[in-house]
Amino acid sequence: MPASEITLDVPASAEVNASVLVSARIKNVSPYYDSFRTVIYADEDLLLIHVQDLLSEASHPYNTYFTMPSRDVTLLVRVALWTFLSTGWQWVQDNSATKLVALAGPPPPPPGFSGSISSKELEYDHVKSAIPVY
Image 1: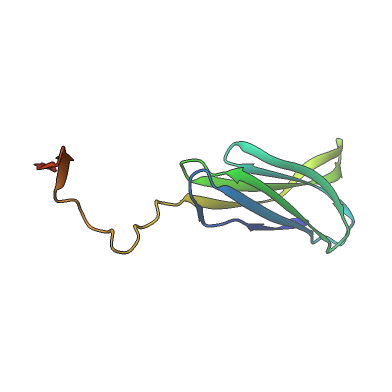
Image 2 (image 1 turned 45 degrees about the horizontal axis):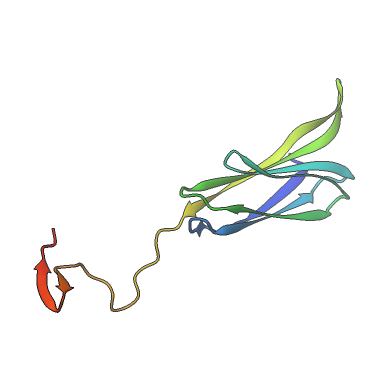
């Protein structure tokens, strides 16, 4: 059973070049005072590394941002626990969480501007002529 609990809050979608807030909260659910290392990634890009000591049932919030690229992004939060093993003190993977931020499509056109183009017209020196639309 993990010693940590992760709450990850991100929007379901974002537009290209938008600044996306990533909020994570790490809670110590063990009965002990423990040290946790939190690492947050957006795909392969490292966003945050932080070590925090937490009392039992205490939590710590983390906020970071990334710029939305022109594709979907998977956010990954990994939490490691500082623990003593037969080889000595070391970080051991404790828990992880992932969420997808989908690329938002272009916004719908404003009312009155939907439909298709059936013809265009060119005006030059007060003379108008149709331009074929294919």
